Length: 402
Length: 118
Image 1 (spheres, rainbow over the protein chains, first blue to last red):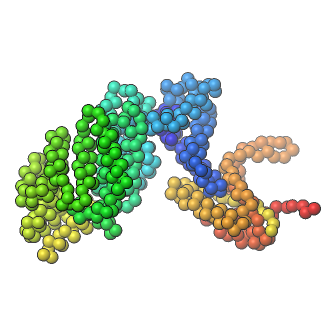
Image 2: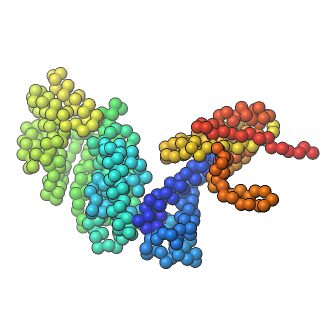
Image 3: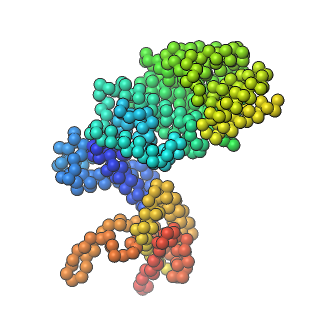
């Protein structure tokens, strides 16, 4: 809704658009609390916002400049209502959301600022919620958002999907959506409902991208598949006490099989076209895991082969770490440790708790409990949140007990 | 059974406290809806009524002067009304005790609807 209004008012009037949305919500609440929620609340909200917008345009058309490309049409009563109505039709509203998403992923903004803007404008999260999700102070988030909005305002119009920068911008959008998802899935954030909401929002935004022919690229499908397959495992990643489960002893029956099926269907769609992205490969790995009934049943050859292609396409020490774990599953702990120690630019993992944790896991399989305990203690020191810390401390204790 | 009108009154400050944040507004709405449902299932709700906008105009006196509302001099404004059925005014007042309008410093004004019996 904010996106539709911004189309009318112009990006420089983003605050005004947000006020109108806020006002529509307040009115809705007042009426609903007495009359009950109508059968189609979102249509009701849209109509309210539409009427407020038209009101405002009539009242302020001399005092303010609205969207530059629409100014002439909004100036006269002959066309104003039609233009406002058009902005609220489903297809246009969808397009505006996409354009807003692309605008938020402005190259002048750092990735965390892009995500904060997306969460604020497109997902309706307030600064305190965003701050909670990113473990950052509220003031810092507010500053990040207001700085971001200034960059948007300077653009005057929303990003044009026909722009020459479309392709690089789309990959920035993909990255932002995936970061948003990762933040919810295993980021350094607090436990609780906000995290699951981040995953849900990321998947909703990806679904929006799939709706439009220009943005429904193979990479978009692959990213959607990847998130669905990961999200399917979310219920088993946290046990009732909130502890992170290693993939190794996850309860596979708790996985969401409907979501796995959806992920697989999305992955099939992503194969149409000649584009192969890191999202395709990561989704393929997730699909192999989802297909295996147990850890022993897993096709490690396939997984290692996909990791090899992924490393060739997008080298990263975290990918290499995951590949080393797969090698250990297939060829044993000794080979796994050798792989871990041989990772190129291993120093980039210095602050990553799962590097020592992986070494600890493999040392304990070799029966070398003293060294395993040492590694897990190192991992505890790097833990980024409580569930991680508790999980790793449990591993330290299990080494000391034996 | 007799008919009464409930006038929900609220001060701007209390209104802000109840509806100022999305979270508070959501909770307030849920309490109101629960209350309305409760009144309805017990057969006391004749007509749920409507909320009233906080802005308005006042036409006053023989001079027919028109002034803008809201009614700034008033400590509280009527935010809405409902028509309810109760045994008598004491019963109607008793029923109003559960109204969410009372949270904060709102009030419910209860007025019997006068009817001619022919």
